[in-house]
Image (cartoon, rainbow, N blue to C red; front, top):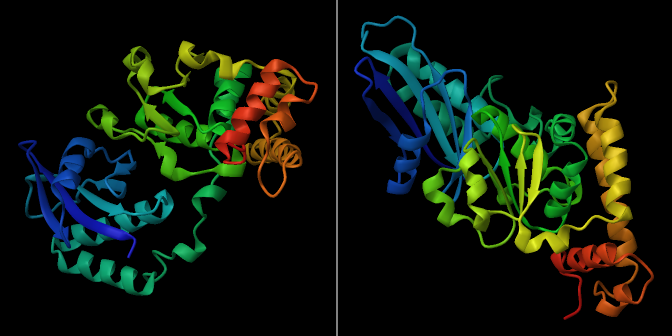
Length: 328
């Protein structure tokens, strides 16, 4: 099953928190994550990386009960796959059942029904839910906020590099981290996405590509964590000086950036249309690049022998290497 663990986390009037129910178990690392990330804010739906998967949480404020000491209940699901709509909805269904009598029998029955049938009445039916890749993030907002320099983040994602996104609050970070991950629609990979990862866990980031989201502006001083820094709060995009040669912009980049900015500033355009534009432009570059190769492999001189700007040549070499097409 994709669900690894489920638990109910309660807070009382003394501001003490207790994990009241667990299925089937909770590892120490998962417990630490629950205790550090779940804030009992009923306006927030939490989605963050967890060991072996993702942690999802929603919070409700219990209606009047005999136990007036209970002020909030959070339902947490830890699952292997990335699907916020599916798991936040399941958290809500379980949480609402739990607050009817604060007995774990109801939540357990719902969870078992969901795991066995992959459906629970009309309240939870994943087959009718939008898949994560179909849920288009606020791409227009991203391009509007960071302008033409957003092309640097596009380049970083296409080249499978490290990107850090800074925004003002958790919800904004989660949305804009997804938006950056969608800049290259040909290779959306949620396994590389780390929205709101605790700073204490940064040493667990992979050595290769990722998109890390945070509200901590001080991360700018941690240059070892990023190749490109997207600071939405300050409308800026910064390239790590150690890799700036890989981010020199050529005609290819400027054409994509100009088209994307025009669409982002068009009030009548949608995020879906902007993603489609990025998909078509990126796929066109990839198709032309693959045409230089043979049997999925591209010789270095097939790129370097062609007349083009040095910045474009370097980008295409890096792009071929990132896709595993460049001959050794």
